[in-house]
Image (cartoon, rainbow, N blue to C red; front, side, top):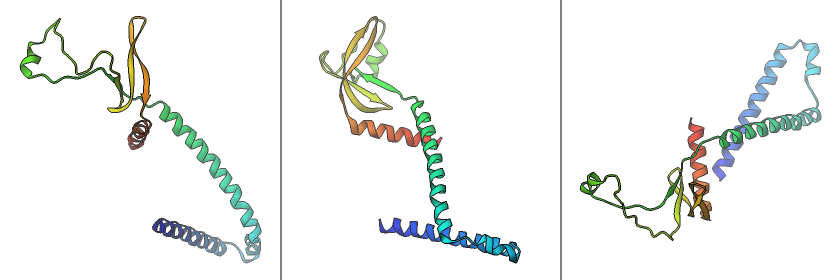
Length: 158
């Protein structure tokens, strides 16, 4: 934490030094009669800073809103795992229409709901009209946060 504060102090110092260099360069370019006008009292400088920060804050808020809008459009792969099994290659080759694979779960057990390969919830299979669906019964919030974090990092890399 102390290292971060030192870095911030160094950045502030370098920005202050840069500002002083700019002031000196501008003062050298101005004729001697205008130097007094260029020099503003400290009070005026202090008043300008909050306005600058306010405009920067508005831009930042807009940028955040744009980023959030982009994030909401990122597609995620959602899987519902009914069960799994392990079979030998011989059995796999012999599979055909009408073959049945026995899964490791009973019909009453909850199914796994995965997003981008990570288990985030459990649910029950339901039939809606002629389609299957899943009723979510349990959500793992930490896993859901990690999926969001990982997806965000991947999208920012692109």
